[in-house]
Length: 327
Ligand code: COA
Image (cartoon, rainbow, N blue to C red; front, side):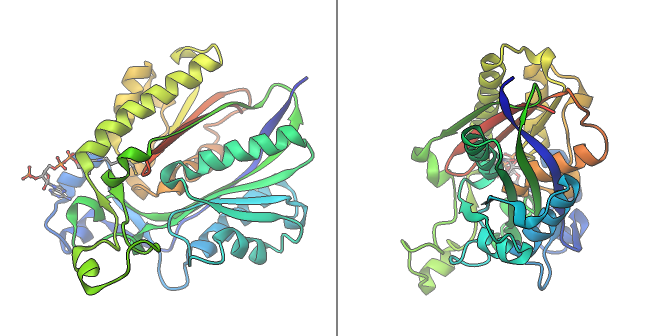
């Protein structure tokens, strides 16, 4: 029997405030109708005071630990995928480690934008293959509301805040992670970027005037690349496991645009109930989108033992990847 990485607990945390499309109509030149038809988003959650990235991440993690039935001090490693940490140093993962009291866990953040959770899951899988006794917490957590320009209608309607978490452990048997595939293309970085706030570009009045402290996206180009990469990585995962589209019981894709999800569904030949969708409630929560969806699918009973689950993500960098698993 092979040792596989199994998800033994999931959790999610959304901030307390909801921002609807109607609210956005009062902020920028947009309409509920445009946002719904072009993106599928109806509302998103926005972090209020005290609802920091590390707070959301820790709360999601507590839920995941509770479901897993293990104590924080049994964790060996904490990986947080994020592009909107509380601060450059320390990492969100270290703040989560402190909040949970995960005394013996190593902790680090991982920068792979919207693919962060799947990159993290892939790393956890490698650790567990090396030592099946390890317990690893993988989190995706974002406060993107602090990274968007609320005057730019091309981006501010898309993103939301939230966190999702999963506890991964080793188990002998058929269930667990079957394959992971990671990809990147740094040559296209300028299509989706926050140019300032790192160390390369000083925050001068000119830079602030250009809005380089916010997410800048060439939406149409990103859309084109996202559609192509997500479909390709899905087929790559299926082929690696000797599967066809018919073998997929549930697809959990990064929730960036309803039209991208619909395109994937058609190309893979999946029926509607096999594609998990919650973009209407949360918008694009970047690294948090897949673990939030995973937790919803898990708690609602949509995910049942033995199901073949395919997860795919795409984001700035560009980064993209897949994790296929038997639930
Ligand atoms: N409300 C109303 N009109 C808007 C708008 C808004 N919020 N945002 C843009 N528009 C306008 C544009 O100005 C443009 O007007 P014009 O034709 O007069 O120039 C028109 O709508 C079409 O813009 P375009 O950018 O071509 O729209 P689109 O159909 O490509 O949809 C996105 C825009 C952002 C929703 C879409 O490109 C997208 O989802 N991109 C990918 C995002 C993604 O996948 N990210 C993944 C990585 S996180």
